[in-house]
Image (cartoon, rainbow, N blue to C red; front, side):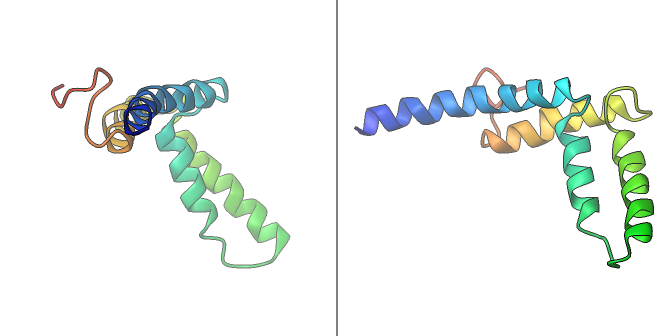
Length: 100
């Protein structure tokens, strides 16, 4: 049973970040832009639908800079791959090592 758990966790760490990246790529985002948008959505300060609509537009504009076609797309992709994905894998790269 322990061996099965080990192999399951190993495969999960290898495949889930890749699956998440592919899904977000279909929507034109990466993990950095998605995380930025998600965290900015938490900053709404009023219940007024007009003010919230303006905040949503600003949030999408800011997070969109890290997404595909944004001014900071390269930074967003780098942080997604080398920051977020590595943290999900416990510091390991795509091939399971700790090097670049």
